[in-house]
Length: 102
Image 1 (cartoon, rainbow, N blue to C red):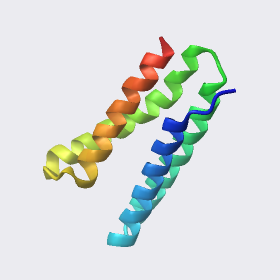
Image 2 (cartoon, one colour; image 1 turned 180 degrees about the horizontal axis):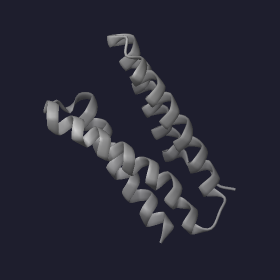
Image 3 (tube, rainbow, N blue to C red; image 1 turned 90 degrees about the vertical axis):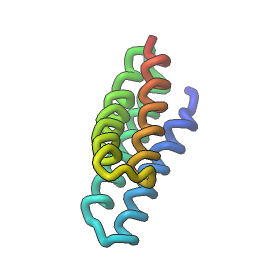
Image 4 (tube, helix red, strand yellow; image 1 turned 90 degrees about the horizontal axis):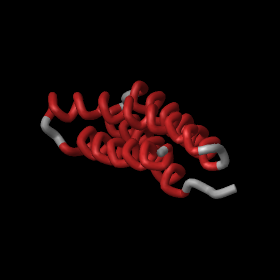
């Protein structure tokens, strides 16, 4: 079974982002969302790595939701950090997982 290193790195990136958001602004929503999405992306990415190609759509859907939410926050705030960066990396991961599903 292959290990999805990009998926693991991305899930750690999301979880750490939530932790940093909590530490900087005492935002419990950032902590819960970051840890939840980080764990879900990690689990679905590892599950999908040992399955047929169609299972890559599970982590792709999570990355797409994260991209849309953070993309809308980026458009509202016009600040690249953190919303723009998370939206951009989520978009790249969504594309990667969709290409893996084909």
